[in-house]
Image (cartoon, rainbow over all chains, first blue to last red; front, side, top):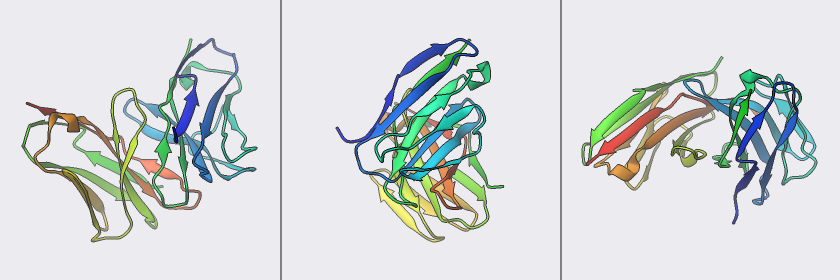
Length: 112
Length: 110
């Protein structure tokens, strides 16, 4: 099925651990983004990419790394997890600038 | 800094009771305004994009309108299945970066 696939759906980490949230899309979209969603704060942009090999920071990039080696994949790495990174993470992709994003179903991350 | 404010935060309607959700924005150079629907435990689902003041788009019971300062999502004769959180977002600079509002949680009751 065409769309954005995120794995895992749920994850619990201990403070200081690292992990990678996976995101893959099969729609040949150039634009991809990572957002986090916290109660009362809306969706906030972490990192984004305008094509393979090109990434940039969003509003809240600290503590996260990304890379875009292929058009299809855009993994998000947490370097050293902190309780403040407890959130729901969404990956999204878009064909062109100005087009609506297709969102994945999210990863719910808890850092204890 | 771009700002997006949605109101009300929550809205409870009876089935068939029409209403409107508001999204006001303060941005430097609007390139697009987006409406999304989000069901609990799921990712946002794209509804509409509006690009210029005066533009309107419709989908089933939903109609989105845009002025120079705000957008409205009109819901006509809502049904319980329209219950969801509705998110508004603006596109200003490059990179297809969206700034989201905090959403309006809509509940439609029988």
